[in-house]
Image 1 (cartoon, rainbow, N blue to C red):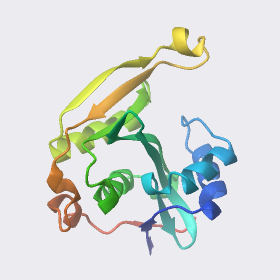
Image 2: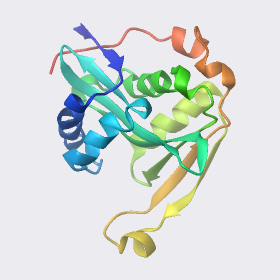
Image 3: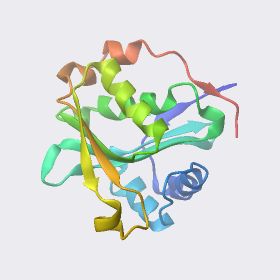
Image 4: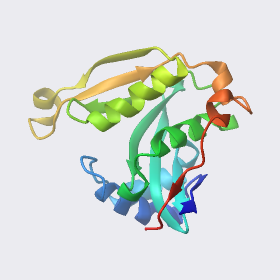
Length: 183
């Protein structure tokens, strides 16, 4: 068992992020170019989980241009070898703890109705942290995707507690160590 280190991604991580996403259905794979942009232009809004030089987790996101106090989470991917340990929540909290995100008041994502793992992740995080949650249809399968993709529901958490980003926050200090078998 090896420890997992969380860090900002770099351009050299983009291919590994793309491969990780491909291993995590029902996530939609992106082009490697998209992952390069996420790992460079939007690196401050992303985190990767590294175990012995292999990526076992990734969160990508961006700040909403019209609402800079909202962080939109694009994708959360956890390799099957690292699942069941709360790594996804740990990555999200790590991202929110960054000093550059101290002004984030809302966490948003879209989820298809059948993606139970994502619903459990985000609703569980909201319940754990005491954050209000609101959901609504954002992109309709027929209207927006021509029937080629399921409807996407917006899940908005917040307002987030300002204490969640403080150093020594109880949300972050109660974390148990995370380990995974090297991939």
